Image (cartoon, rainbow over all chains, first blue to last red; front, side, top):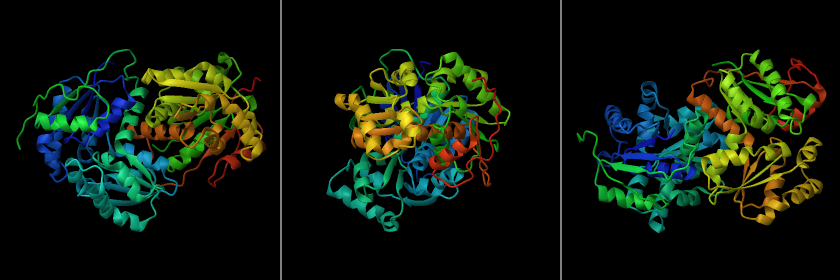
Length: 271
Length: 271
């Protein structure tokens, strides 16, 4: 099974998922496509997210991927079921893995979720959690200030702390959760601040780590992991500006390798 | 998908897996069969383990299970591939989940494994780890004193600490691992002592928790989790003495419910 694993995201957030895939499955090859030009997806109507996601999927299908990872919470919430029905390769999103990991970690079954407004409004996390255990209490909170801050590169220091601290106050005041799901792929980059603000007693769950773990599970179970020896080659594509994407990717991917091989604009840029 | 999940083990160790399944998937119904009469499987020749395992599997197949969990490291090492080939329901063992969780947790990719002599000699864990990442350094250690101690009910106190401390010395002297897999389903019962002895800086991975997580992943992915409302009924069977099994199960399963409904000896007791 020497084909690559495909990863799609609305922009750069999915690089935290890609980074974990590279770390946990170092023999696998990745093809990543970030729709940086049309990012963010969060505020867009569902129909548009569905259309854009399919454009990305069709681009990767031409690359002969063996599996698709939807590394974007909004795209997962709106398209996962449809993609699974229509594609004949395994498709994994970022919501279920985070939900399952939270259930594993939580002792009191009071679970917090933070994400963009789109993700929180979709109720995808509460639905995923309660489908498995209807007694779980979910405290979810939209955090619209965090993605812009991360994209500006403010990942530490007093300003970042101040924004995170103000944002998470409603969760802190309830003060009962023992587990917090980072329901947005940007948030792992400020995980340490989030942990500090929410308290050391709270398990902080990164969708990226957990999604990579489930890719390993599903692909291992289906005997589709690469088992030979090779030096894997990864390809990263962006629909937007190559220099910007390269700069961010080189900051976000914490292992050294050629970050962007090229940037083919293979999808229809209608917006 | 209202059928039960089947769990087999050579005896009582798999109850730690069952306990986690009940916690992480509270809507599911379990049927557990422990071959207490012929326990332990560890020192037995492979052919015998294969034969006994198939007898257990056939007993559970008559109960119309939708999935099989092999909650015994020895049985997993010797029969998992064969069971997967021959059964038309999903089959999950305890080795791959522990290996994948360790890879997720480890930062330095130096991973320790402790287990019975049978499991350690089978090299099932190093193989599973290195199949995914050939650069992982594995320190494995057979711990023949731990299962008898746990089965005697010595789960805490100075004697337990002394035995664990002496047993784990070879791992402590190497002092490089940042993650330790509990490669035997008995060990979660002495997890706190193991953590104390090996040090707080080491991630201790319980096969039980991780196997339950992967059951959730595989069954969720295949849309085979129960999603309705019901009060689940579990059945626990033993091939050995019902009173002994009941006593241990009531100690090990930390949530209150009827531990053993009945004990039908449905398999051929040749030994």
